[in-house]
Image (tube, rainbow, N blue to C red; front, side, top):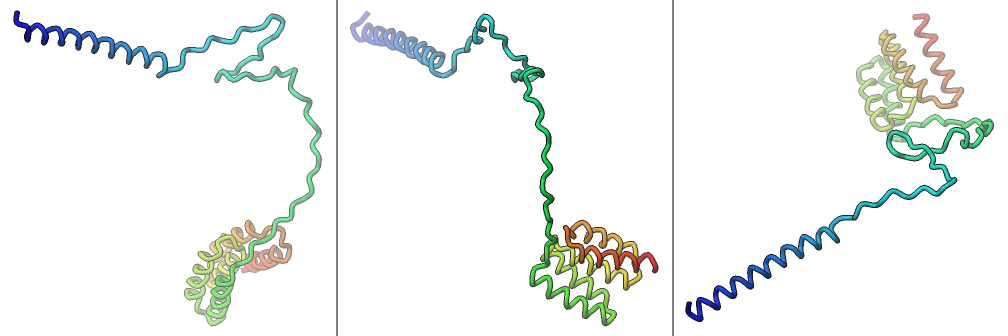
Length: 173
């Protein structure tokens, strides 16, 4: 064997050994630092009872240790205000009233639909739509829009009275 061949064989052997150490070192590093070691379950101290656990493994206090239920206090009543239409919606409502007074119900409904898109939470718009449907003789639609207006009326007694007047007119029609 020549000196050159021997050096090449020796280098290949050394490289092979280094490669083996490098690979085993990486896997050892991953085992040590790449994952958390499993944690042993905590030891139970004598005389201390562990709380029971539910199906998901979450501990819960036993029923006897639950705090006594406090009597409920009456809460003050909350006033719910009726949402008013935005100014742009009010503009379309006024135009719709004029169109309806002139007997142009389709234009009135179109204008009120625009008002509804601007102020969808304003019961006023739905009551106006109900009145147009009532004037057209479509009592089913008028009742439906009265119901929607009622759901948005809040605690506004005057507005609720307006809805009742329209519903009364529908009842006599």
